Length: 64
Image (cartoon, rainbow, N blue to C red; front, top):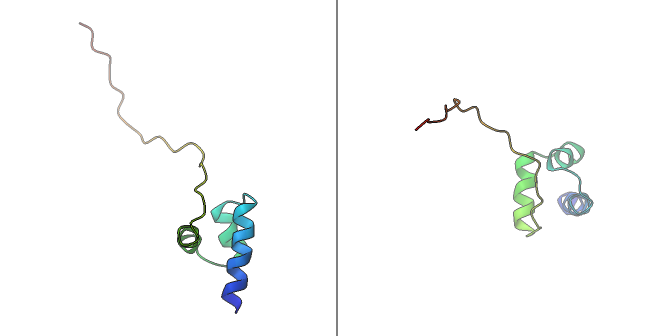
């Protein structure tokens, strides 16, 4: 089946370190599908880059 071939290629790409976004674009599937397949196949989670820091109002230091 076509799906089996896509999953096999997904597995190879994931193991070679390709990002989820690039895997989705290359295979023509949604990024959510990539995430779901990663969970279904119990593949190890990769460390992501630094997360975006949300804007927080600057707190002035308290002077005692």
